Length: 216
Length: 216
DNA sequence: CGCTGAATCGCATCATCATGTGAGGTGGCG
DNA sequence: CGCCACCTCACATGATGATGCGATTCAGCG
Image (tube, rainbow over all chains, first blue to last red):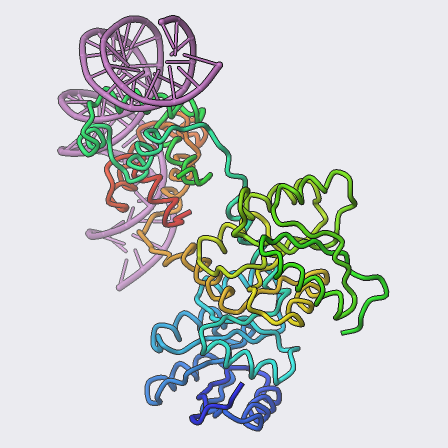
């Protein structure tokens, strides 16, 4: 890893003053970083957005007084779309991780990590990576796989799946018939087969099952 | 990192013979690993499950001849539930990553990684982590956040959301009226308001929109 | 106090749907 | 070849749904 000629500009948003200051000092000392912003809460950092140029990276705590770090994350992304946001916190519970990722965090680091790891992670993020603690990664993978559970197979044929997609798109029988160049009767027949296979009796039930069990 | 007294038992499933052998040798040389199985495809490895004791970890390629590594992953998990499965491949495209994770991989490494990183990653996995290349991690995060897009607000009232939930559950108006102890007329009225707010004209459309945009 | 939005209920009417029953045509497989 | 699964189309009928046009109650707000 070579140190870039231009230092990486960086803001810290962290309510623990001594930790924030010592981290800033340590990062600058490792070389290649310039901590141009240091804030104890999101509100101040967001206010600074208006009259300062955006940094390349913001390290953000989640357990902040006032505005929650995750709520702040969304706002930072709005006012500084090209700035990368890295969560730096002591929390590693599913809910916080999940919400941070959904809000668009580019990395999730733990405060327990040594400074040189944090420095490496920041560089990594700028190069297109998303560093995260491997325990955090485990949680993310677990959440992910729980999203896409058993792919049940109801034995739907290709044609039936096609029809089902049109139903999910909100079309009625006549529209589907037109778009597929079929008779309404044929669409009707396909639908009854879909209902039988999915064990439902209405279109809404079929659509709900298709979306909830990811049949398409 | 201290080397455990008992070596970690390990299988390799990888169709490139020379790579597989050299990796096995290299891992054993770093100490702490015992490559007790070496297979060029999933079928052989799965057959071996029946008369050999399961290893602690399997490193699995995804671009295998015959059975796909991801399909194999599911089967390994069935016959050896406590064995951890780590993907080791050259591919880093969204689809493969996504499917591997959904199938229950505990880690996703790239073959380009140095052997000592692979060794560290295996130990990390056994300690409850899920090591992954940080570019892979970026993809995972991107997929994740695309799952939970902007939470639009259509201004649905609490009552309307309730009705919508029953619709998603596949119930018809009369059933919803009964369960909520309401008149069918009331349910009818709520539904029209839902249709107006969601800009749809059918129940299926409303259900589809509710599920796809996570309105509940 | 009047206004507004939400929730409740009513009737009517036409459109759409679900379902029973039937049948002709294709392509693959043993 | 027959069998079977799939796709296609048809008619009919009762059930359900969507929508126009009402009404009453009630809580919150300026």
